[in-house]
Length: 298
Ligand SMILES: Cc1ncc(COP(=O)(O)O)c(C=O)c1O
Image (cartoon, rainbow, N blue to C red; front, side, top):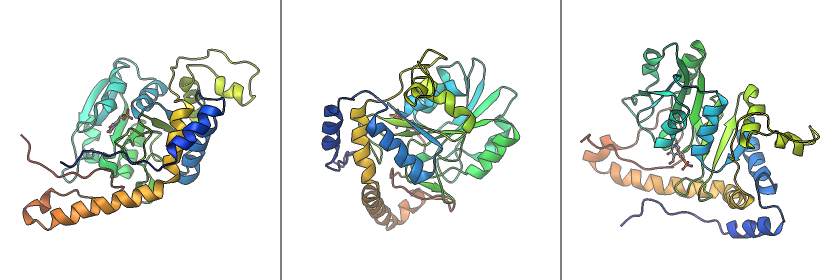
């Protein structure tokens, strides 16, 4: 049997975890969390990154950050994982599902306009298998109707839309480091805030509704409860694991792409399977997150 997924370990994970455990600071937002944030901000130019305990948590932060209220409508792809929907359903949003493009599993940008009503607040897109949605078309529909765009980039590390890193285009984006992803920490995720206006409140929601992050930077002389929030930050044990993976990102990616290509070439030799192979549009790159074949419905 071919397993669905095999977690890849670089060898440094336990070394960094040992270091975190013996540093005397094991809770969140310590040395390894900051190293991971800096890595993403420097490599991809993301404005602000906040590690979370999962991509699901990061999506829930998005719903809080854009103030989803009961009755607000959120457009999302009908073909996705449950977390894309749950995060907004939890805040009472009405979910409006958009169909896939005819040539790949991503949301069909041309179908968005007719789904927009006066109650629409956001469009959530998923770059399925790490292959970019048509972001120019999506951003222009959103701009015309004054809507937030959230990229569910759970699959999308090290993948690009016309040379722009996925996760860096919408107002907010979310990544997953679950064991099945390219870069892992067991469970784990990240919120990326590209809209300056949302950065301050994101830090507060991340830290249980307090301004503790500002306190640690010496900006206030005590911290207090200033908004709603929850406990979204991972411990240093998880961040230490993640940092070991990030240091090996290029090696992990080249191995995944090699294996993906092997599947592609082998299936491509079978004429009856050729139509069922993944289609990577010209605007997108392939980060080899997943290999899929298109099946008949039913
Ligand atoms: C598209 C998508 N969004 C969100 C998630 C949730 O990620 P996590 O397991 O980190 O909460 C997944 C998980 O596979 C996913 O595929």
